[in-house]
Amino acid sequence: MTTLVDVGSHFPGARLPIEQVGNKADLPDIKIFRRYFGLDTVHRAPGVETHRLHAEAAGSLPMLAGREHLVRYVVMARSIATGAASTEEPPEELCRLLGLPNAVAFSVTQHACAAGLLAVHLVGDLLEADGDPEALGLVLAGERVATLALEIVPRSTVLGEGTAAVLVGTGGERDRMLSYVTHTRGRFADGIPPHAVEKDFFREHQVMLAATIREAAAAAGTTLERLRLILPHNVNTVVWKQLCEDHGLDRDQIFLENVPFSGHCFGADSFINHVTVRERGLLAPGDLYLMVGVGLGATYSAAVFRH
Image (cartoon, rainbow, N blue to C red; front, side):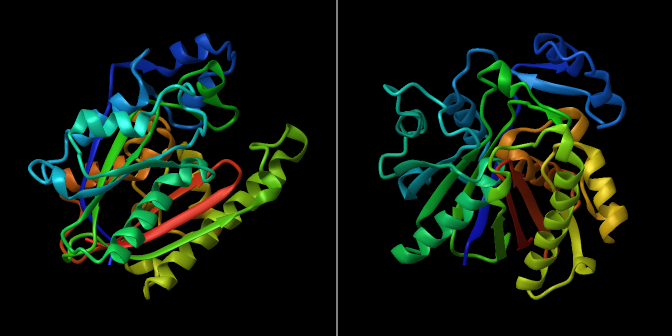
């Protein structure tokens, strides 16, 4: 069964107020993101390649040290498919940086910011098929803000460059994946729609998000009430508060404390939140928790784990 052997995160460079990012992107209503969406700062490290940001996150994994030879798969979970020049090989370069001589390295895309959970699920399946209980996989999520178009998702969030590294195995009782559910609504393949249909998009978005969360809980043989925490994507606070009001979720279960500090770090958010709640002792052995992410396109994914 797929397990999270270790989870680490990294925030590069300086913390920038979102107004500075908004000025760069020529966004006149950036203050709305602070007052309404609950955003404050994001981290940026201009000029640093994504695979080097990933290497820093992987370097924070104490369970990786001394076990590099056991890593069979290194997977970059990418929100943006075109993340490097055609002459570059970021997954292979990451393996060289980390000293992973036996790893097969590749990227997964098409789920946008839900790709992190996809990669964990995929690596778990690959490791189980291999049949070696000691073998490991390494999933990397988050990426750099490479263009002005990636600075901000209109009427939604500000992007940050925090990254996460997830060491995946198939043995042990710690952080076992009990379910994984994903749905894609292809009619929204173009991303956030224009103002004329935005309300319809947001309404359907909330319905699909709530349904995916409930389905993942049911697939794990549990209920929302038995979940200790929900570790969300850090797009903004409004989405989650409104979801609780409209669809009966418990606001106290949803961990939103990183939203002001980190902004939305592509597919790394839930794992970044995992690191924070673990460090604060908010999960006890045996607690059930749920990770959830949404990718523009639109893909909704959720997974339940037992700590």
